[in-house]
Length: 217
Ligand SMILES: Cc1cc2nc3c(=O)[nH]c(=O)nc-3n(C[C@H](O)[C@H](O)[C@H](O)COP(=O)(O)OP(=O)(O)OC[C@H]3O[C@@H](n4cnc5c(N)ncnc54)[C@H](O)[C@@H]3O)c2cc1C
Image (cartoon, rainbow, N blue to C red):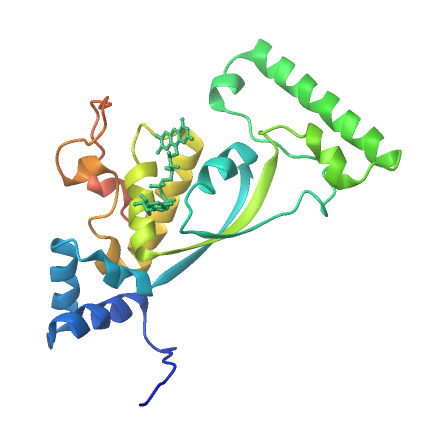
């Protein structure tokens, strides 16, 4: 028996998945083997490539949705250890566009910050004071997904039916993924890109492949 740990520091993610696809079929051309695997839905070859993203300045509401993706790995800014006294927050455009609601939103956030500050100053541990923080509170995290899970994530979260903030994040991640590994993500995106919309209530505005093209500046 010969057992090796293989690591390919010089090999990119497309080459790695291509090698996996070619290992299955014995094909000489790894690029074509990958293309054939993707066309036939043989997606396990995509699990060998992992992509890591740093995400900053998003709401805890987004985080709650993001962490439903069980095959992803996360490292999240801790509200137990990090002082939230400043508590930057995300404001949805629908609220920002209404001056009265915006004033009320700002006042409520100031009240919450005031409570948090007073509680911490009175000796309440940060891990308890954070109970008052809203879903609007900003957070940062690192997320890693393999290419198969990423494609699944893009199918669900680049759809117009997905909530706007996670859709904006998914759109940016797809743009970056297409730039880094076009062979793995060329056809990635919401279900409507592949043909008929899979949603029970289609939005009626199918998204276009060009929306995620990397803009060379
Ligand atoms: C538009 C939209 C609306 C939503 N609304 C709600 C809502 O109202 N309430 C709510 O609770 N959630 C809601 N969700 C979250 C949704 O139900 C999923 O939890 C989330 O999208 C993660 O998807 P997933 O389970 O397919 O993905 P992942 O967890 O990333 O898993 C990927 C795939 O692996 C497989 N898999 C993973 N774990 C298991 C398992 N334990 N058993 C079998 N197969 C598994 C499945 O094939 C799964 O599709 C919503 C999601 C979207 C996109």
